[in-house]
Length: 126
Ligand SMILES: [Zn+2]
Ligand SMILES: [Zn+2]
Image (cartoon, rainbow, N blue to C red; front, side, top):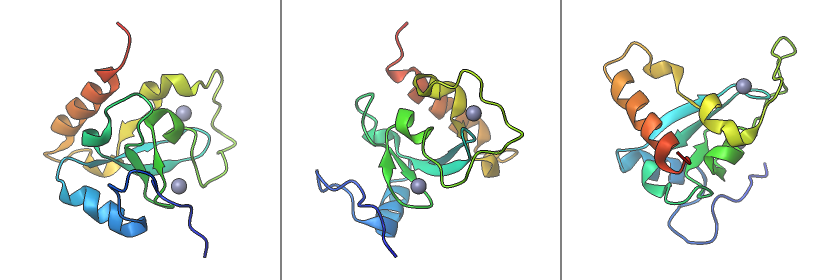
């Protein structure tokens, strides 16, 4: 089984599953998902989102690290034929990225939605 290399350069991440565990241990990471051009779930680590292109979301399937904009283009499933994505633009990733459905209806939902909104506004031009 070949795995893509995960975040090799700066050494702050351990490879593969360990990186995921490491991110979860930091406490502030939370799971996100998108349904663009297929569906994908990942772990968003706000503390690594220091520039617009910083890899701060780790795919839960391949453990690759992505910036928010590249994450919404990343998927392991072929697009659902019923879903139309007219005008899909990855630059509008903030429209496509949501908290993981598993949080909906839980006590964390409000807080995480708020946190994600803050991340979306972090580098947006006003
Ligand atoms: Zn979409
Ligand atoms: Zn992946």
